[in-house]
Every structure is written in structure tokens, then in C-alpha cells.
Image (cartoon, rainbow, N blue to C red; front, side, top):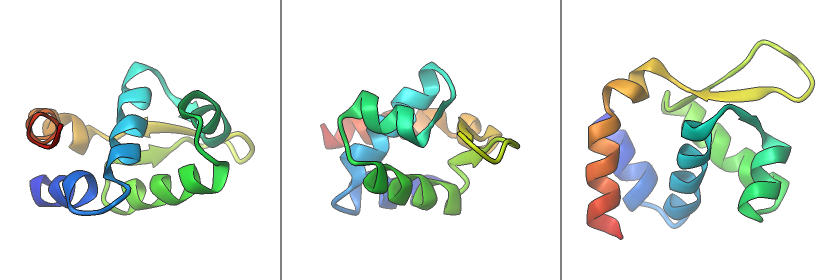
Length: 91
């Protein structure tokens, strides 16, 4: 997971937005529309980043079909310190 976090946050151009999404979801679960509004990012951009974070087991989708909420995974929670360390190094 540490390597995946380095890739997602520091290794690609969208890392800043992915870190912002993680921070927002750490506060509370949100759907893609809520994230787009809160972060002032286009909906399609948020969806792209959520898909990347989901592919790397950082976020997971809730059960509902419409207005699907996103949550941080337990696996991410086990590596939260790695995330914080990466953020400290890239900021």
C-alpha cells in the first residue's frame, strides 16, 4: 500500500486532488457530486480520481446505487501514517 500511495499522491500529476479527496473523505463519507462541489473540481475529474483510489484500495463505494457514498478503506486506515508522511514530503 505504501508504494501505491507514493504513486497516487507523489508520482502523478493528479496527486494533489487525490490527497484532497482523501482528506475530505476522512472528515465524512461523501458522494462524487459533494466532493466536486466541496473541492471546486469538475465531477468527471472527481470520478476519475475516485476510480484510481478505488483501484488501489484506498476508497470503497457504499451499497446504494444513486448518490453512492465513498469511504476510506480499512486497508488505508492501516497505512494512514504512510499517507501523512508522504503528504509531509511533497508539500
